[in-house]
Length: 153
Image (cartoon, rainbow, N blue to C red; front, side, top):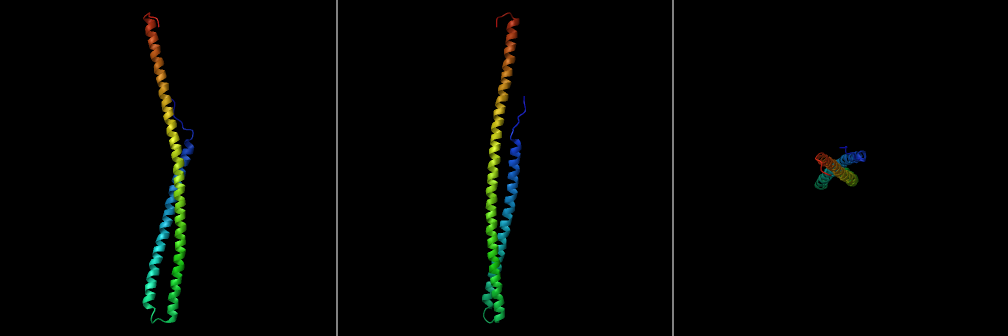
């Protein structure tokens, strides 16, 4: 019995490695996306608290303090805008990583299916070969038995 050999095994291994790398890349991208979202949440919370404080203290504050607080609010809004932009970039990168993973899985699965089909065909051919050998052994035994017994074959 011969040994099954899939000629594209190295390519299949490469596809598996690509899928694993894509899974890692997706994990990193998702972590970056979550970190960016968390930064946005923190900045939104800080900005909301600063706005409440500014609204409460607006009356009766000195103009210099008021200007400082307004500048702080503007800075928080600018930082929040940047954080939202980074979050959108991270979300786009995560989506690209998901697409890359889907493509890697498709490539791996197609080669795995091809391997399974080839393995099945190899097994069928092996079974046929074994059956031919068994048939030949049975035919030779039958011939020997009938020739020894003097009966015509």
